[in-house]
Image 1 (cartoon, helix red, strand yellow):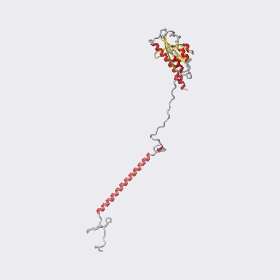
Image 2: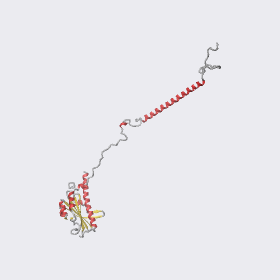
Image 3: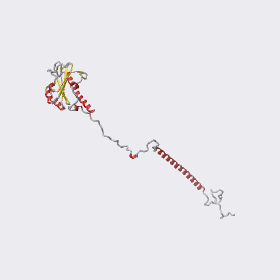
Image 4: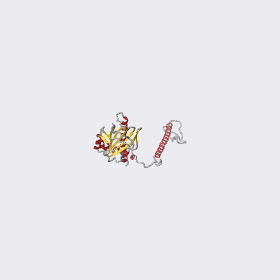
Length: 292
């Protein structure tokens, strides 16, 4: 077999076993480029590593997403957490700024006015007498004690008054006049309370009274006569359908002067007591009406 030029030649394949690389002479274009082959192999290996790394990253993301979704699902599982599962849709829940329901304001009725019950005989119907209006055997005003003396009651108002008062009481249709006397040492005070049908009549009677309008003093029951010729101190007032008066003086017959402050003090204290008793009468009737 001839191996001259032009005869068949065996080509070297670096990937086939038992193939040989020709030695000597020029290398034609089919001779492998070792540097290029090494670069290609390195590129393929690097690409595989990148693919493996990328695939692992994707797998990690997938697992992380699955875990996150699992956690969200567990947190949203109302049945597992013991929470109700039939909550209304968010659109049906009241908003945070929704106003609270409003209710019409309510209030207790105003208290009854005691004066209303002592301003007209149609409402002032509770029992009345000198002993009811002035109870007990003595009166304590502050630290002073006044002893209670006699009492009197009449429907003829003019008969127990003097000066200009009988005319004033008669013109205003006085229906009743009660009296009581209190004493302290040598000073005595008679309190008179006159009744009318209306508040207007009582006010009219007081409007016609003057310094000469006097309720006669009431003596007896251990109280000496007083103010039967001597100068005494008198007062006139009204409250509701009641007019009340005081006549204060000395039981020894001495005239009262502006220097006799004890007489003025005792007369004022008993006048206030009469007012308080009349007002208390109105309070009692107002309270009874409110409880019905």
